[in-house]
Length: 138
Image (cartoon, rainbow, N blue to C red; front, side, top):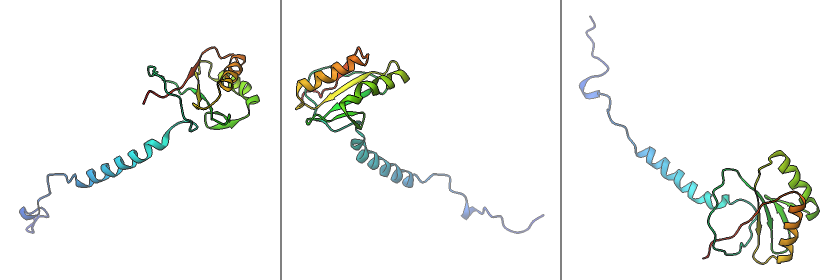
């Protein structure tokens, strides 16, 4: 029989509760990080969209976004392209993903003729449905 004292005497009993203060500190830091970085994660090119009253669309697939800046610069997603490359690139992307939706994000100062030209090129690429992205009324 062992006559020494046990490691768990009455004065040194293990603590039966969890200290949650460090957990709360870490969660608050993560919350602040997400709040700061969330506005920076906007998709596409920064354009000043026109205001229009329309219902929000629910999409499960990330759409193909064609952006037109006020100066006429054209982008697919975030990649600047020449207007001559638009139809072939869209056709190649749609061959890989046939049901891929296509949206146009045109700056509010973009001339309507430029948007119509893009719509015409998308039609020649075989795109039947095109969505126009707008901002809700402020």
